[in-house]
Length: 124
Image (cartoon, rainbow, N blue to C red):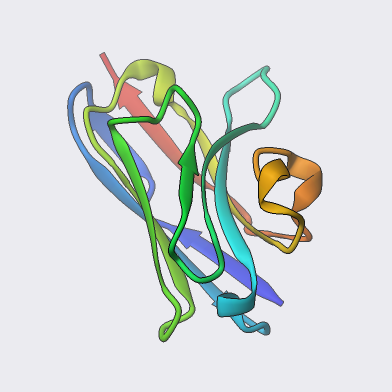
């Protein structure tokens, strides 16, 4: 199983980035997918999740109104569109796949598979 995250980079405050996660070795359509992030010296934190079917999403308060998570099950990919980026969004972003109940999708422990991370740096 491999989750390959890409799309990170350096962007100015207010800019946008789209992260992508390509899934191989499992049928992504049977897993809930999520994005987490980890800033230097901080714990890994939940950003957004999307149900396996794609019909439900949930976001951390910090991401609401700015980020959009979506998936293409035919292509086994999940993406995170990030708009109005702020310096506080600077972190390594990880995609993850899991099958725990939807009520605990914000917990790291709910995910079995993780990507390697992609670095997002937002300059002020």
